[in-house]
Image (cartoon, rainbow, N blue to C red):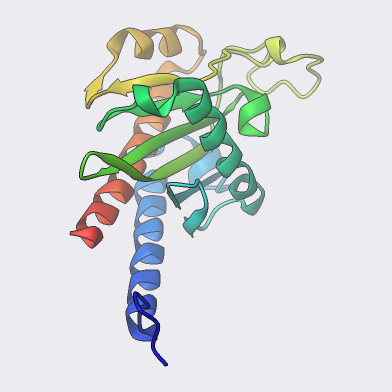
Length: 204
């Protein structure tokens, strides 16, 4: 007997494959836009599409370990910012390792997806940035997070769709490789924006 509100298996598979395809497209945007050989050669990143409860819906191929941390990063960032302080077009950046689940160079971009004025889900991308101003470009002998580089709990790199240029300049001033670091950040944002747009198109 068919339950009220149930979805037929064919529709489920169409939606599932659409979401997976969208995540793959996010991955392709990131790889093609990246300035960073750790991204386009070693695939040191992870990205995906999440529902409003921060549960993974679809992922693009990358490092599986990272996927297990992004749910917690989204939750920490949203608790810190407060859902009431989030508007359509906001994009968050976090490098805080106790929230991202790895060292500070693994920077996370989070893009809330709004449908009808409410948060419907998220896209997120974690990427190993080449340098974030630590004691070394890649410090494997650090003894605390302050030696790893710039610490950002959760900041809005985009506010209501407008880039915060002052924040970009703070990031630029705290890396030995400014063009590459900003380029990778822009690649993450572009990938997350694409994923958000694909979800919005599907809902429509």
